Length: 91
Image 1: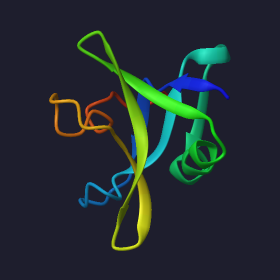
Image 2 (image 1 turned 30 degrees about the vertical axis):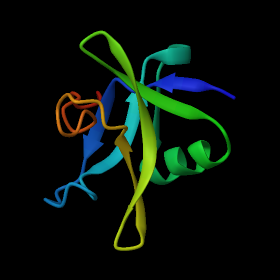
Image 3 (image 1 turned 135 degrees about the vertical axis):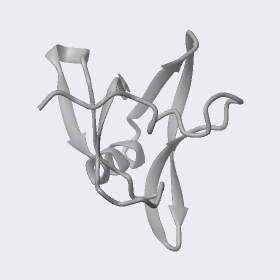
Image 4 (image 1 turned 30 degrees about the horizontal axis):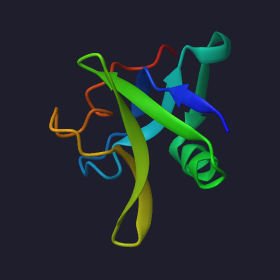
């Protein structure tokens, strides 16, 4: 199992918070970027993702909205959506 730190995101033009993130990325292993669908598949296959919020590791989990899976951070008492607060990934 691999655990990857998410440090950036690519947003869609949709306003629904369950559909706002198109892909995620990080600096581990020389830099990477994958789609949300791929991230969901990775989590289901036993790998994991996390973000750092105020110096603490917060896990990314799969949630569902109207039957559609999406990713979000586990409730941690910080920002309502730690993923949406991340900076944009470089192009």
